[in-house]
Image (cartoon, rainbow, N blue to C red):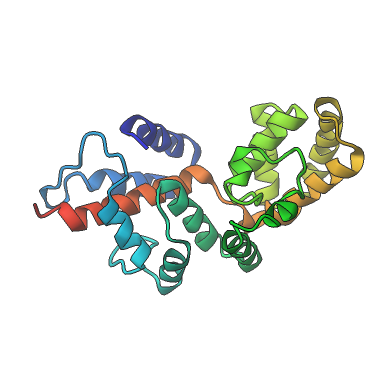
Length: 236
């Protein structure tokens, strides 16, 4: 992830989130001046030494990544990039044990050809963004992408679905389901049973605390990476 992408994530957080995001961005910017540490103008997030530290699970004073629970996840999943780190943050911060157990099972079987039979719970619907998380909508944006691509939702309608799922707004979900079924019938070649299956998938794995905001998770992952970078190189 380059500086331009990083700035885009930062701006999205500022525009779309509340007080916590302001604190997060302040902490992010503050790293540039702590101990006189100047980060590379274009940080590529590919330092092998830093990822070795993450994979060891031994981190100190790294926000949200120094707990014993997160340490276990880091050692088990062996992250290699910001995207991996973002998923682990979302799984841990979301606190849904069923979601984490299912993700762990699919991760452990990632080289098993039979895994793809399991993932076909969304036949024809699982685009690249969902396959990256083994067909589990870890991020709210994944659900939004699906309804935009396959049911003709506008961005505003998809965001309304995101908010309704996040807070389990039953009346809103009823009307959005009707729109989803109608839109899916126009934009796909599946049958009504498949549409229902996809919708129930959203409700089971994308509601409440189970689905996390991706921009927030990416920001936390970037912040953690920069803290480790500062600990490793800041005194040089």
